[in-house]
Length: 399
Ligand SMILES: [Mn+2]
Image (cartoon, rainbow, N blue to C red; front, side, top):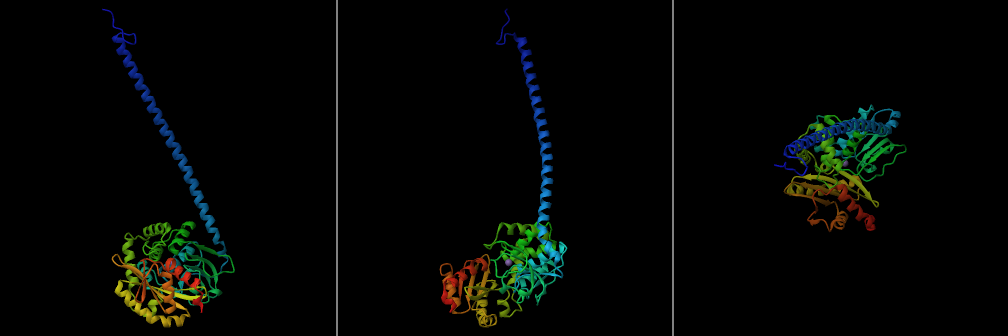
């Protein structure tokens, strides 16, 4: 029997040996490849972590450098003698109160003698926030002449202390249109189009490498919630959302919506307040094309209480116009609920009514004494620009 030759020219026995050899070689090759892959992974990981460590230390050095660069803008404060007072606008709202506290705390942490103050009585919403944070109400500064001042949440003379021209203004931190206040000397002027001044101050904490304590974080939270209506208002930005997240963590507030709800309910309570005090509780004055006007912001629970408040504001207007020297005034009443939610504007007199008719004939419904607008219409972003636009384009209002 001739040996059967296979394709390799070997007999069956040799073929078996050969196949085993091939299999072994393959296994060895696979092993070698595995070892090489493992070695590559180990080397790669080593390089990655070493590179990562270099990158992170470089990043840390960069961060430290940034903090030092940012802090150097405070050098001028070293030459100041006496306390630096931090104040928001007249008829303080929760952003003004929280921002004053937060910025004064930041300056104190950086070694300066700073104190938060207010230019008038705080409203019920701010009282709720201070109470929740366990903080005392702020000192009312009557006289600012000769004082070192940081102005937060405003930059208009009409919204500041009467004698602010005679103060030494060292900084303005604001999120409104640039105002009328000017300074003789250098200053930190930080204006950013964010939802609240407290958000700008949170960014400044980060820039200076400082963390607010629990109480300060809570009042800053209150500022953002109040000015952005719990992030619902159209002025809300990415920065406001991030600031609120970080600050609620620091404040230890897990249920931010519930905190806002309690704030909101406190803001609806005008208990023990006269009609005049209600109108002036969140009140601002403006001037466009030589016409002076004011807007008082009020929150109401439902349409019925809004109607009641609107009637009461009509009674307040004549004396409010007389005592402030305004040409016209408006009450802005906000009803913000899941089931019913709107903003309405009540004009003080015929000329104010004409302005609203012109400004909102396309976007508002004229119902009896008020003009009903979309909910969350921001005083700053919707109401004031529309009114200013009408006043500036109609010279007849100046007569
Ligand atoms: Mn504000």
